[in-house]
Length: 116
Image (cartoon, rainbow, N blue to C red):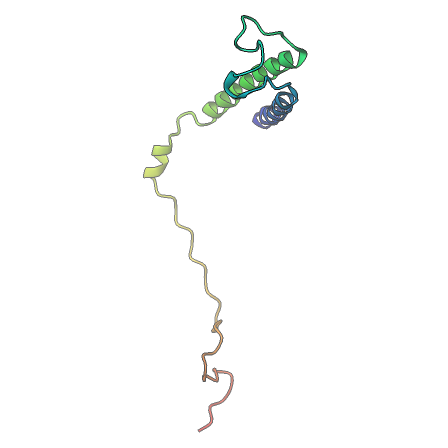
């Protein structure tokens, strides 16, 4: 269930980004310039504006649903509770027999007989 809601959430996020980028710019930064918009009493509701509001509402809905699902999964478990209990230590890996390092300079190694 969580994967389905998460997939829908991600698709909504991508669609919301696309629809916002398709909208016409109001011109000017911080609401300066351009007639109407947020300054006027009521802006014209375009089709893209309505789609944006719908996608935003659905995005918030899936955000709340994911929060509820995550809260149900972690019911009774706290991060602070997990800090106090040490996890069992894994067994140390066993080194293979023999020397794995290359011979040092001047060392002939154990494989060649020493000349006396």
